Image 1 (cartoon, rainbow, N blue to C red):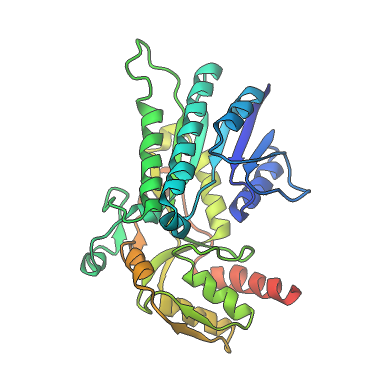
Image 2: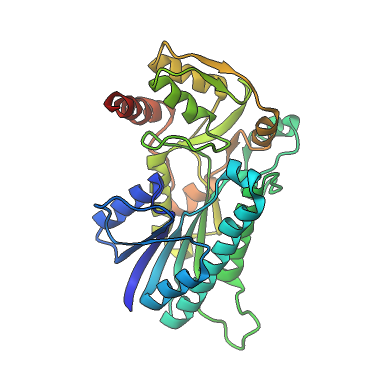
Length: 336
């Protein structure tokens, strides 16, 4: 059995690839990746191809490795989850429970907590109407935890399960066991320059950018006034690593908001047109997808993350577009 291993599920995505690169550069490991997809040949660590919901596969991993850290990135995303809610529950909740059980067993066996890092989402929020959304532009972690989507329900469920396994697992035993150390981030809409959008409910922003860079017309599926928080992908990876590095004694909660910048769909369109003046961007709101986005907050209060573990984004609105998104997306499609 290899000891002190790090497991990254959903590692084939961009956040997984960037996280792997940084962990490898820091000399962390052994690194074990799990994904339905193959990994690039140069990827560090050992890759296991399969489903995170496969209990037999997880049992084999548990037999081969003693994990000190799990980054559980695998998920069925929001739009797909609405179309296949039962599958979403299996992938997003049941698989997470299998991993929490694995972390609990290994925490007890190794005599120290297995750290479990989980990316949650602003989809856990469910503001009831636009008037309430306008009256509460920056939500705290405890506010409006009433999601209206399967994805949001799944994320909130895993947050609660993680808190249970960290604080109350096997609480009827005569002596408290060593429990996992669950930590979670509620991400805003993530924008990547290197990965094309995959139909997420917050993807209207990055879809504008990728369409403009390819010279394609785009019809935005939300109203021009629709406003939610966003974050550039490099900051998302920094947030995961920052939370993982924080001393346990400094943390006041299990799930943290993290923010960067907030803007409306029309302001996003303006940023895209500044970079690609010939872009054709119109509006064709989809009532069902619009209804989902309307339940998400304008912005998040991330003061707890800033106070407890020093969170601060490096990519504000200007730097996200000028230094990260526009140059890399332009280069991506010029090569094609």
